[in-house]
Amino acid sequence: MSTSSVLPSQRLFKLENFGHSIERPVYLYRPTHAEQVEQIFNLATENEVHIALRGAGRSYGDAALASGGIVLDLQRMNRVLDWNPETGVITVEPGVTIERLWRYIMEDGWWSPVMPGTMRPTIGGCLGANVHGKNNWKQGTMGDHVLSFDALLPNGKKVTCTPNRNKQLFHSIISGMGLLGVFTSITMQMKKIYSGNLEVNAWAEPDLRSMLHATDEGREHDYIVGWVDSTARGRGLGRGQMHSARYLEEGEDPYPAMTLNPGNQDLPDTIMGLVPKSLVWRFLKLGINNPGAWAGNSAKYLLNRTLGNHKTYLQSLVAFTFLLDYVPNWEYSYGKQGLIQYQSFLPTDTAEESFEEILRVSQMHGLPSYLGVMKRHKPDDFIFSHAVDGFSLALDFKVRRREKLAQLTDALNQIVLNGNGRFYFAKDSALTPDVVAQFLGDETIARFKQLKAQADPANILQTDLYKRCFG
Ligand SMILES: Cc1cc2nc3c(=O)[nH]c(=O)nc-3n(C[C@H](O)[C@H](O)[C@H](O)COP(=O)(O)OP(=O)(O)OC[C@H]3O[C@@H](n4cnc5c(N)ncnc54)[C@H](O)[C@@H]3O)c2cc1C
Image (tube, rainbow, N blue to C red; front, side, top):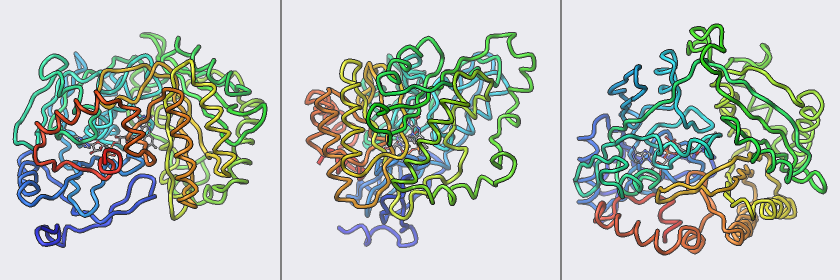
């Protein structure tokens, strides 16, 4: 049966990914309660229609899209169900955003131990992908801080999962990219903080080897992240700037009530008090090309090496954590065809060689990345784990000539596989079933298929990413 004969045309929308590189026709449903999710599961099962679960749609690729099928947007299921400021335990519906979370808990002296680099996503979407922060080697993933969750499975069952109860489902619905069931409520442990500020150190490093070394050494801090000039060549290949940060101890901040006030954390509306931030992406657009990116990255590196080198300063938690939110809609600066992100995770012993090759090969293809970010990681027990005991390098690529970009990402996939590396579905636009089979391994794929057959026997949860990556 065709979807158009069973689904009402007033629900037909064109929906994009975060990178604006793809647009798909979908039937959009926005439930406010779990009962409505159940009804939509029944509708899809009876009519053999596919469903993609969607939070805020901040995945870079096609993880939250279902061409011609139903997209179940869960942002309206956004109630905070319980909060205990004594213990830091919070229970939320999946559509609560990261922004709502920190605003809710901060004045009581709490913060989420794991935060992605933007505050726009939902908690459900973050757990679907099992996001990491700039402290992955220390705090693990967001899933590591979940005490329990309730989920509704397409087979009609409602399950409660904890790290010890329904253990396998716990470790598979978290990270399972919305392919096994939908979170309906989530209970998480927050982290105690004594200030709304972090103490931050910034310094420049001249090449990839020293960037990796600094990222590794940075493990003594609470956070470590490197910006990589991915346009630099020769001896400067992989150079960049490091930022490490630590939480302030109790008593270190003389005005904790002030710095923990969410109003004082808000990102400014203007840059240097002059340019409205809402306009900045239009200016950025002028530099989103090879010469512009080279000039911008080089200038940034040289400024960091001179004026910004070895600086220590206090910065608000929000400004440090959600740096990318400083420029609203920055992704539009990549133009009509948008951008993709390519984030690869390499073990310590192969990281240097593989990342050097990745940077070189993308430059040789005439498609250098315009933004590179390096992080330190540790492995975890979740089914679609992306992390390794090693490093990740996230590279943003402008989409211009799609075929050429696909040739490049195919070549990069091979470099990552040769280095025993891993990939991250939340950022992906480039994986194919053979690459996924090699990175996840037969045993994980068999375990996933078995769980999917039980949880979703009619196979209704099928995103575009699932079809692309699992065939
Ligand atoms: C600027 C930027 C910076 C980022 N920085 C980081 C970072 O530092 N670290 C990191 O790990 N990621 C990062 N990301 C990626 C982002 O955090 C993830 O893609 C996250 O999953 C987005 O959440 P969302 O609510 O937008 O979910 P969506 O993108 O809408 O969905 C993500 C996945 O979760 C599933 N899903 C959604 N809701 C539910 C639910 N209720 N139950 C079950 N499954 C569900 C979807 O089917 C999909 O597979 C960044 C993204 C952007 C745009």
